[in-house]
Amino acid sequence: MKSLLFIKNNKKVISYILITLILIRFLYLNYINWKYGALTTGIPGVQYWLDSDRYLFGADNLLNSLPVESRGGQYLGYIIFIAFFQLIGFSIEIIPIIQICIALLAAYLIYDLTKSITGSRLSGIVSFGFYLLNPFITTWHLFILTESLYSSFVIFSCWSIYKAHLNPSFKNYIICSIILIATILIRPNGWVFIPIVCCFFIFYSTRLNLKIRVSLILLSLLLFIIGTVSIIIINNSTKVTNPYELMIKGEVIWDHPNERIEMPKDLSYNKSNWSSVFIYVIDHPISSLKLISLRIGKMFIQIREHHSFKYKAHILMWVLPAYLLGLLGLFYYKKRSIILLIISIIIGHSIVVGLTHASHESRFIIYILPIIYILSGFGFSIVFKNILRYLKMTENHMKIT
Picture 1: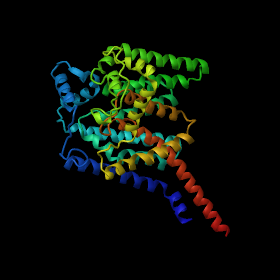
Picture 2: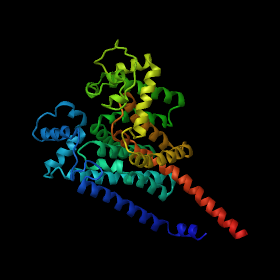
Picture 3: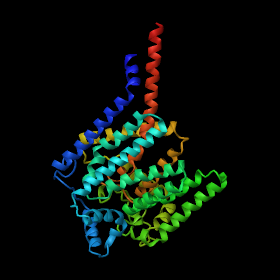
Picture 4: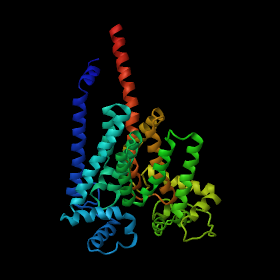
């Protein structure tokens, strides 16, 4: 068929056109957001929200050689990020621009990962496009919040871990380590990368037999749990969102009392120690698993009762096709090491939500949705190959008849 021949002969041209259109649309979304606040608050320019003052005051204290107060230390990486550009003379307006540029670099790495696994440039473009064109992700780039930068660094972390796995060298290990440290410093969620990277490299260590690898993985997870209980900096990060208290309250979505569920009121544990949540879950497994599942479900499907039908349809358009393609990609590429890494990142961030709470808006999902979009690209490659196969069979049938 002529259409099939045209696609084969013009792959590069079609790819460049698609990438150009995606970039134009991405820049347009950011433009209308900057000019009119169209995707956010309706206020033009830099966007501010709940925690913006924490980062701005923290950066100001840092520049004036004062200690970063309260919970600011948990987001020191983002505070340093803001302070650096202020130190070299830029105004706060530069932060969203830098975040957009970093997001574009992250988008390229998504494209690179997808293309390298599938061998399909078009599949890479699909992952690239899903990420950049999603308005529910784009909306966060203009905020003075950790969301944009952290989600970009989750992508950087995934890319750097995989590259160090494929090409183990001192250089790649150093790059991976620097990126992981930065990711951890931007948001406390980044701590999940410690067990992820340890278990991933242990699992694929060819020098160890299976029993030793499994034992070391279990030991790494145990040590991480002990560390989260005993390390002061991690314990301090739970003073506001204590998982045990949130479990007792049945909190599904932060500060949404109408969404809470009834939980066993077992107050026999140490209220001040967040790690009591583990004992509570063991003692009340059914109720706890129900609450954890609701929280994670609310994170993955970001629709709420008060949303309009149009809003619900819009957000589902950006997640359901991606999830379906992602499941297909997961099934067909399940033997590739990148799959284990992606699933580990998704599970790690989901556990954090499961033990704490989901958010009112689509914040927590954007940390892992770009990673899911890589799986979506994998799934698309399968669909596209089957479409081409069908077209070729149809063409051969027409020639015979």
